[in-house]
Image (cartoon, rainbow, N blue to C red; front, side, top):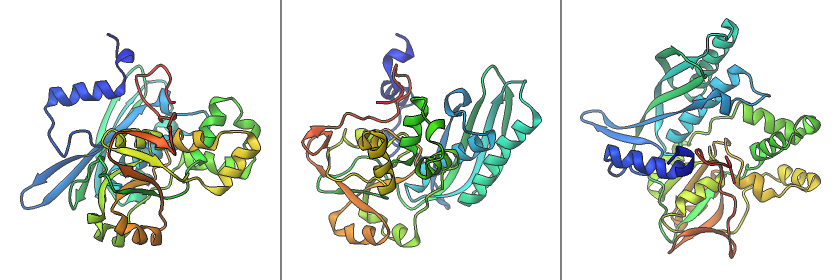
Length: 317
């Protein structure tokens, strides 16, 4: 069977079986290793083919920045502190020196923004352009992505900017609406996402958290993964109000831009209800409850938006 017929989830399951992964590294977005005398290290590698991830409104600098922030985001949502990274570049030979330098500068500047050292990497020539960033962090304890029944899900209510941008881009309508302030902000956040990092107060309350993921592949994808361990029922949409108004004006379903967006790099935490006040004070909102069972629902109906998935005939849905 071709890989496109298996799907991303099945392929990841096959990989984990071959490797023989055990908790906390099974079905997690980072990998943990205990180093005697040092502590718990968290590792993450992320990247992709530029033919898939570089849109027409992005520069090579933007690509370097975005992939680096995306790698860090998976560590930060586990409350791990990024400390160092390396990057592997495979490029076609017909790129200019300026494009090459812009890509590397984007990685470098994003590393500075997240407080990690860019310490080296690898360079190759190939028939496609590929960037992978591997990052090392220090963690307090492992955090998985399986929420506990009785928890509530919280996030920062700023979803929709990137989802609206992608919706307009793939519909061929982005240029027409690019002067709209909401769309313009969405384009900027898609090009150069702002790295979120946990406050000291949040980190000191790590025991409030039973599971976490970032929204790089869409909030729908986050909930789909969490919904494998418990039933998740969404009761409020964590959308930016300006985006909500723009969706109404453009006749776009706000649920689509929230759940199918991706690359917001916003944190989603499953927490004990007793910790809700603390998280609200830190700018989070509760938007879903976790119950016994499986699946993801918006009220009483099943969530139809599933975020971004590789090796799928339809890249998102």
